Length: 380
Ligand code: UDP
Ligand code: GLC
Image (tube, rainbow, N blue to C red; front, side, top):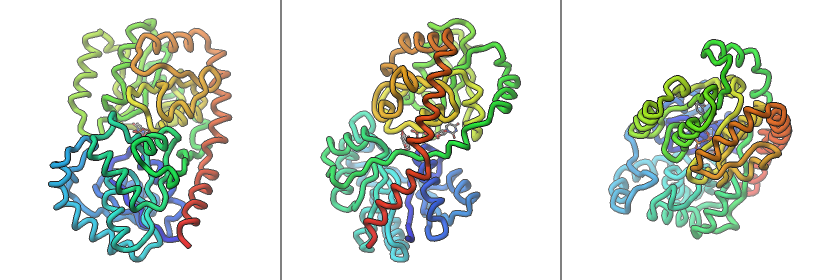
């Protein structure tokens, strides 16, 4: 099957890392079109995947855009739609990854009469999207998509609650190669030494810096933990959240936590860094659509605490494969951190159980097979 993949971002977020693993399956028969240049293009090229950047201008549609802002971006979108429609005539289907790609892919699929698959990585709710954008997503998906792949039941439910046709949807979790996350103990030890963390209890947070990812909640929680608890904040502001980055630095200074919080920036050695942690914390304050970092921590055999909302609830079974914490509750988060620190054997047993479960439930091979079957059913 020949697929024209379409993605909005040049940056490396979870939706792009998920797409990369799907694209690899079809790399010799496919093209990935990007609506922005960046490190995602470089990564695709490293994997010998044909990629084309369709525009160097940034598209002005944002998750919180108003109707007028959306309308004014039409001028930018029309040539892109034409271009994707032309390109897609050489492919069996258009695979739109996330929202801007849906807008362009939907109309292009109508023009070229190619089926459209929409991979939904978001929770279509007021917390994440403006009213006009919710309406746009639902209308385009309902009218033009042959299949909507939702990255969790939570994303599927939000889509349906917002008016999306549930019969179009299939839930497919992100897939992972468990081998990539194991056997990093030696490098992890080295990292702990280099970072002078030998005697610390290290809590890792692996997310882009963004208000809803809730790094501030972990910083606040540290105030209630013993002095040996240190946090690594791994990730960068990918979508211009500089004010939030400043806010985090101010918060650290105000609480006098400079020695216990490290800002690590964007890293490519996630399995090594996760293995170097004693606990991985996920602290999103709005429902997380899926939460790759939660599964990655499990695959690294690291105990994980996740915010109890959205897709995270489908990934972690409280007290069995990790812990769930009410979102935005630093006090409760601190209790869970201290409990994990004070009961290492219990934490280790939970992490081992999680590793086994995650290796089965989220194995890339099985997930890719599921996707291949769904796509085959659309292209006759
Ligand atoms: N990640 C990374 N480097 C970083 C921080 C995060 O490669 O410095 C990866 C992380 O391992 C995960 C992805 O980025 O695979 C984030 O995906 P997730 O689903 O957790 O959140 P998203 O940012 O997509 O909402
Ligand atoms: C999006 C979501 C994240 C999810 C990822 C992959 O970026 O925010 O929760 O894990 O897509 O599906």
